[in-house]
Length: 147
Image (cartoon, rainbow, N blue to C red):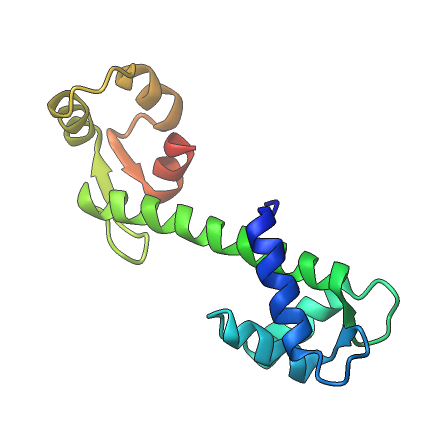
């Protein structure tokens, strides 16, 4: 997920602030402080993974361009997490469980679609998604339907 110019400018400011020795790179300790300052709280394992994913030259430190890759990766991961949260919340609202277990009835789904006045062909969508024709939608089927 690309960064906006405003985000890049904020990253540059944070990177420069935490590049304590002015080397043009930040190590794992400086990266953690930088991300904390940006409102993120990665674990040591996540920090190692972030560096290993973008440390193109194998130095164990990251340059600004590599730092931008870390932030883009974090932004994408957060967006995916947010997308799944919305799907889970919708699944729960229709009768599923928070742990993604349980099922929702296709009848209830049809009623909600009708009540909200949505103009989708819910019968076709159910036919494509409820492949076992059980009349019940589990989380995997619901997630596929929402995609």
